[in-house]
Image 1 (tube, rainbow, N blue to C red):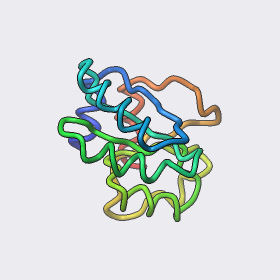
Image 2: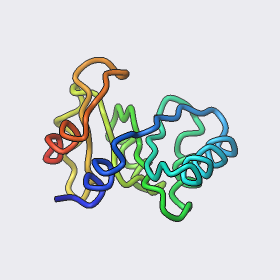
Image 3: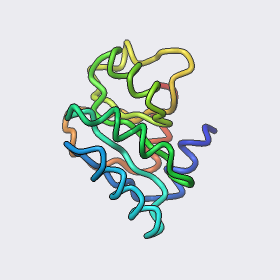
Image 4: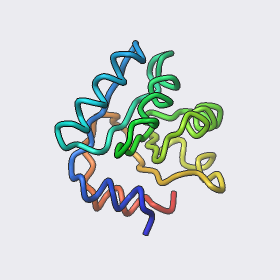
Amino acid sequence: MNDALDRIGAARVVPVLTVADADKAEKACRALVAGGLPVVEITFRTDAAAEAIRRAAAIDGLLVGAGSILSPEQLGVALEAGAQSRSRPERARRWSRRPGAPACRSSPGSRHRPRSSAGARSAAGC
């Protein structure tokens, strides 16, 4: 099994951040780790997403995922920034099967639909 998916499953809760400021994202991520939450998903809904992922990925003990990945270009930026997992809408399934890409979760429609760790594991081959 993929280490990132194992860590996501063990965490049981994945906070999702949509931030417009990378400084605030970094502070929030440090607070999450201090509070015992070692996993975070940062969405690609703002211009600050890549820098926020880059800063969060540098925090010891934190697994950083990229969410709301809508294009191959965003996936490349997320990977370059240090994302260790990703989620994307179901409609992006075909292009997101890029070799070497990190584990992913797929949201079938609603970006706010809750996903269980079992659901994240079942999407490992996406």
